[in-house]
Amino acid sequence: MIHPASRLEVVIHSRADNRSAIKSASYTARSSYRDERLGQRFHACKIGGLLSHEIINWSGKAEALWNAAERAETRRNSRVIRELRPSLPAELPLAEQVRLVRGFSLWLRDEYGVAVQADIHAPRFLDRCEERLHNVGKLGMDQPEYMAALFDPTRTNRNFHAHILMTTRAVSPETGVFGAKTRVLDDKKTGPEEILRIRQKWEKRTNTALKRIGSPVRIDLRSYEEMAKAGDAPEGLIPQDHLGPRRAERSRRLEEEGGDTSKAGQLRTEIRGHNNELWHTWLQLRALQREKYRLDKSARITAERETERREKADAEKRRLKDARTAAEAEAAVESSSQFDSVRSPSVWELAISSVQDSLTETPCEEPGEFSSEVDLETYDPPPGRSQPEPILKPQIVRVRGPRSR
Image 1 (cartoon, rainbow, N blue to C red):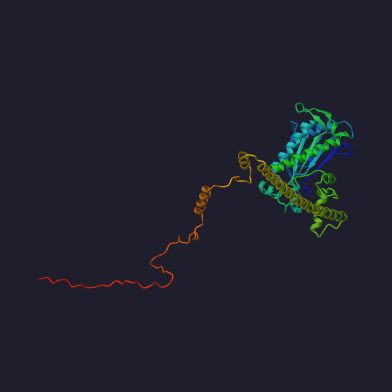
Image 2: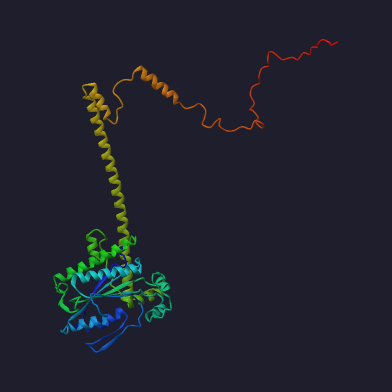
């Protein structure tokens, strides 16, 4: 089955879509930034759920970074931000999630020379009241209790995720000057290849982090079609549309109230059932194939070993048969695994062997038969046959001696 965190979405922020880099950065950083180009301040500092915030390849604050990125673009349809939205496996502790996102952001800097803002967001609470308090930062929990609640599957959806904002231009780490555009990511030919390489790098780093903590789960960012071609998934799987936080919350609320009877909800249920049935059948078939392969391999190894044993025995017999002298026969016997000797034992050897066999004969009594202790005062011998009367019986004769005078 596919891990729920097997997702990395790529979003381009363009002025043509009335997008502001400052607004996007302030939302992901849960901060208040002022857009100098528009002369407008965007407030997001009262929204909760920020677990980590880092700026890479820029010495100042995030507000200054994205205002500089806006000033570097002059066209009305310029692309200012390239955003990556990867899901984070809930099996990873927060420290490992931060390590994973930081390492990946450093790799982006080294590969493309861009500046990066990396933010990790907490999952949503299932209880709507708790989620409202969480959004405004008023849950009233201490840090250990808050972290325990985030990783509790009965309280949150455990959808840990990151927002990685990249500049669309290379940035000099010494001067902070914006350089050339990262055309390799925008080109129609090289762009898809680079995005695929980015996704593969994220998948590799995430699975390495999971392996490092001893988790058996792995993510897979390939499409169903690619996985089926590689033999890692059944054919015919139907991908589901990403719902987003609002649609997911609505669907979850309808499920709690008796079921999502909307057309989209029913379609998602049908697709989910279809995919689950395909996965179940495919996994069973794979298990049978593995068992068949194991049995076939075992039988093949047994047959090969038996053939090898017979060939070796035949070769030893031929060598012994072809021996012309006693020395050759003795050498053949010594190197053989099935012969002990070629000469008949002498009379003395037979006598010695007979004596040694008699010394190693098993005793007539059972082990421990006469080893138990006996209390002679209370011992009652077993009844046996009557003993014959003795032939001579002792008699006592009194003799009177001479009298003394």
